[in-house]
Length: 218
Image (cartoon, rainbow, N blue to C red; front, side, top):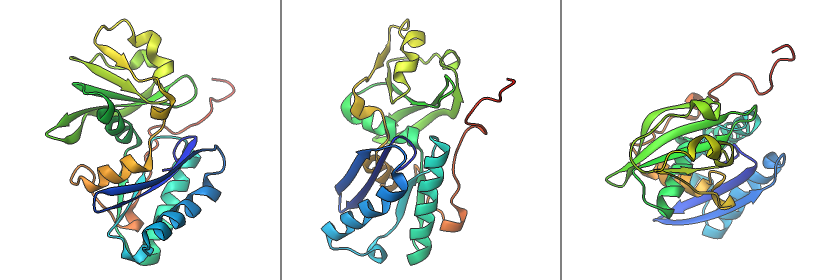
């Protein structure tokens, strides 16, 4: 996972997960492969012994998403492994669901330009399911959801003002829930058919928008 300021890698073997996690913006390219190597060495496994790879396909930082997709493709091509592209917003919701039960999880990632990436999810029989298509927009554009809603992710602090007036909206503001983690990406990939595996050649990023800075004359 390289789509935010955090960089992480995880290895899921027989239900046991190992993880490396570090918040270190602009160093993802140099951090991610050593993390993968350390995890494989600890488990005494080679890349070719894995069943599949999983990657955070976005949304998130344009550069971060491209780094993750590129690394996953390179590793998958090297040993002919399938890849599970997993949503960053779903990963946030899965982590939140392990902390507190709620009818709905609203995942919010800071998208810059006073906007957030957002996605809505529910747990159905132990499986995370999307409620609405993932979107990007200003906090005022967030949907009014029924039932108890738990908000999580780095975008929470941008949205508390617009959402706090709704009595059934609650917020996770602890920093450890700000970013998606590779451990959640791995667990979601293992819960197929929530996300489907593809070949390395068919792996595609999800950006949700086409610009990262506003035009000067906007």
